[in-house]
Length: 143
Length: 143
Length: 143
Length: 143
Image (cartoon, rainbow over all chains, first blue to last red; front, side, top):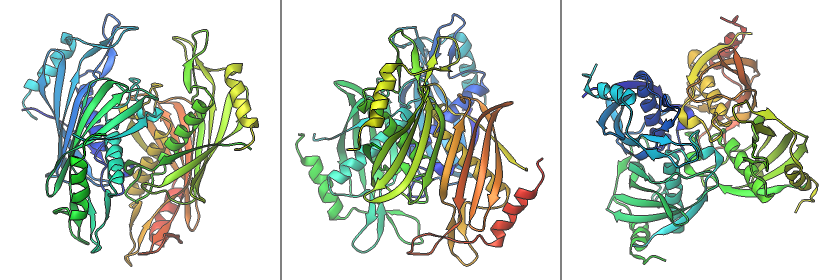
């Protein structure tokens, strides 16, 4: 299964008094990696369709399992894999490595939504211009 | 099943450009609610045993499911339930309400660990002084 | 000079690996105290004027001086004083106490702005409905 | 005056419901830029002296002035200048640019401190191994 890889360095303010990265920050890291993948695919996490309708990708769920702590100045390799694309939703998984050591794994599920003016957002089928790049990312062999 | 309830008001800096609470902040909210429960039970989330050994509760996993967005100045009722206590680990679940509306649910699993000086932390059985209040919280009927 | 007081408990995720509240979080604390003052005065930090125009209070500057560290579970008393109200701007100062100990002081300057649809935000004179409560807060003797 | 430059991309979670980078996050950005400068100079923001004494650089003050908002995915150029080095303290200034546009400026003052075991931290003269690289950074002509 193909994956997209990005890196980030742990910042001082990401740590807590236990001396390690605060667990909630792994979710910020996942999101930034997800957005890097979207940029890599030429997609946007929020924008406008050709007809002017605004869209976005609210979260349905997020989860993380912690195996080893990450620390200040660690350089993390984050591997993102699109594991499922349905007509309206997307599931991505994340692996956090420091060198060869797997520190944490995570998963996020998001849903494609339209924001009609003055109405509540509503889930919708992704247009081909969005579904296409996601499907190609799924089927591309790993680098 | 008994639960412990705490409230918090959403702060401006908890929101993101989508106008709603950023999904990662629900994990900060869960943690603060968990710590409020510990205080309520006379326990500490990090401290020293009578023999001087330091202990703490690192996370094993955290998950959240999002049903409705929370917004600036919303007053959230957060219900915490201890759903499982094993000899070395604790599972707690969270329900976020705004009035009658359930916004999100979550779960965290933590493990009791000792921090011997100069060594890596290691999981250990909870002493009775910690296990006792947790067990009583589990068996107390809901208020 | 009158002041408004609010309290907050330091949360675990507010700390960093130095074991103390990360310095940037004092700005979050100041903002939440400022917003509590606004609520106390019946004002909103962002909203709509009777003519439907949206308004807000972007920051012009923020500063903090640190005297003593704050730690996990500290209960902080935060005193907010409106030190200056000009036609378009507001200056507030902050004192952070733990008991009798002054931990930090800060100041923020914000400007009243309108957000005309499709245009850049622009500073404007505050309407009387906003200026009035602010002026009364300035002239009220301290509790 | 010489400066050190680093860049960062604004992340989604750095924004707030006003659609712009939350003002407190500029302080996180300043700190990360300061730490990048320290790494560039071969220095550490926290560590151990040859005699085993731990040291660090607690904040004395931090300030930021906001001129234009920063937005999601903006690439910020952050210029760091060491403006003063006293025997025990260091003052650095920050300029945030998006392209040619100056968005914000800031300043932080920190003090060199030792952490004797079991005692309160205390300010101290910087050893030559730390003062030297800082002074060379001050006197180097800008790139």
